[in-house]
Amino acid sequence: MSPHGDGRGQARGRAVRVGLRRSGGIRGGVAVFAAVAAVFTFTLPPSVPGGDSGELITAAHELGVAHPPGYPLFTLVAKLAITLFPFGSIAYRVNLLCGLFGAVAASLLFFTVFRLSGSSAGGILAAGVFSFSRLTWQWSIAAEVFSLNNLFVGLLMALTVHFEEAATAKERSKIAKIGAFCCGLSLCNQHTIILYVLCIIPWILFQLLKKKELSLGSLLKLSLYFSAGLLPYVHLPISSYLNHARWTWGDQTTLQGFLTHFLREEYGTFSLAKSEIGSSMSEILLSQVTNMRTELSFNIQALAVCANICLARKWNDSGCRAMQ
Image 1 (tube, rainbow, N blue to C red):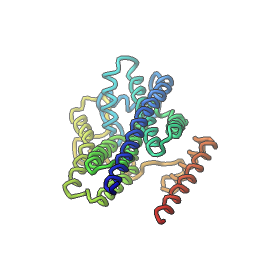
Image 2: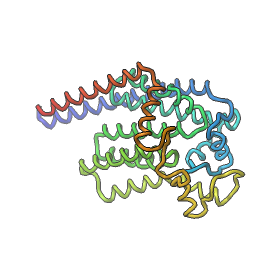
Image 3: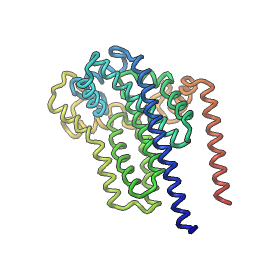
Image 4: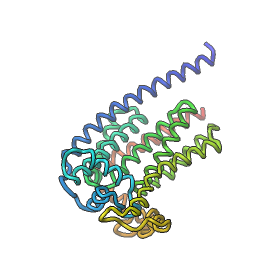
């Protein structure tokens, strides 16, 4: 057998394995979505659950502008849900939409873990632990922007895995364009997603550059796709100019007013999160670790430690084989 034939056979074998894993991930993701959606729907609050929900529901119902940065994507999609869902109060319809966002986030998490590990059990465990932890469950059934943010995190992770497994330059280019659009669109919701975007974009560009698939033209196209994802922000000046909403936040009819709202200057542009003890990065990270200890049982934390040890051993074994 010629080396070329052997190489083509290996490529076909890899394509078959990836295809089987992809189809299995889709089927499992649909099942996870159905299960999580059923639980979230059963536990939905019938009316306004508190927090920012009242403001966000009002902004969606009247197509106004919510507090900075405005959350235009959530506003527009929630308005669509209010119009299309034929049952329940306006608040219940937006709660239901957020529950469905949370179920999609769970299915995307399953899909990503399954594609990386090939384990359905691992994917179900990851999706279940995440979806039914106290805070995730609480904010996935309320009219808040968090479940949509979780959806985008799951989507970007799934696209990143899909990009890594892509076999051709054409497929990588297609996924990169979709990912660029999704990165822009995700920033139309909660700005904390920037922490993921700033990691994913440089990695994708580096991979394309390493494979000699990145040119000035392709970089411009990716920039256009990213910019297209930001289009929902057009809603802010339009809503402010029309002034139809009885309740809205700020004045975005001027460039300065728009930038003040978009950059969250009233809160502090770079203050994406605050803990009870402060807002420095070290304090926020310490608060996150404390919250994880509160939210997740000891068994789950032990599983996470074991998983990291196994992953480190796997990488070490792979490195040793590569050096031989």
